[in-house]
Every structure is written in C-alpha cells, then in structure tokens.
Image (cartoon, rainbow, N blue to C red; front, top):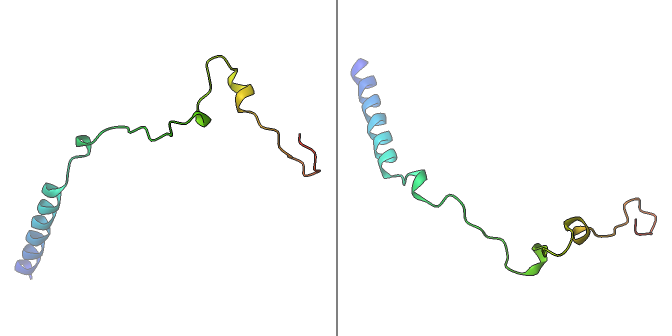
Length: 67
C-alpha cells in the first residue's frame, strides 16, 4: 500500500514540476497595453470643460422629453 502511495506522489510531483517549468513567467510580458481607439470620440480637448463635453441629454423619466 505504501509503495503504491509513494508511486502516486512521485508521479504527481513529476507532473507538477513539468507543468511549472514549462510556463512563461508572469513578469515576462508587458504590464499594460493601451488599446483605446485613436479617434476623437474618447478624447476631450484641453480647451473644453470635461463635464460639458461628456454630458448628453436623455429621457430619464420616460415622459418623452429630454431631461
């Protein structure tokens, strides 16, 4: 029974060692990649107030009028 258990542990240890040695380290990649579009929709010009440039009228209460 103990030889069967030690054989299983040995196989598990070898499998884990193989998996861990084949993985690329997390720190090998870049930390951040900017994927935002380059068009002007997502950019607020410096001459505009941010809040005024990003507000849009909408019908919040469902009465048909823009609030």
